Length: 123
Image (cartoon, rainbow, N blue to C red; front, side, top):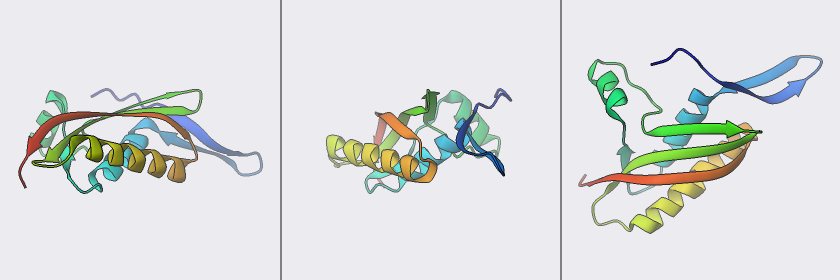
């Protein structure tokens, strides 16, 4: 894990200061929103996040990669869905939920939410 965090200014008040948000926070918000969708069992992680979780450190943004360019957010999600669910329907709901949650909480524009179905599992 690198210690480098990217932060982005989401509000500036010349009297009081500014408000910044890190890309890690954006990823956590996206992951939590995605897992609220019925049919999504969990976020899918890569090898690094799987090793981190086995070592006892839980990373809430597992399965999420966030890019920010000129105030616009691009989100890549890897999810595990429940068996016998409609993949297209679940994916669309995840895209809508993540986009609306990020925009409502941060005020940033979400350009894209890309969903990767990495696995299908039973409850």
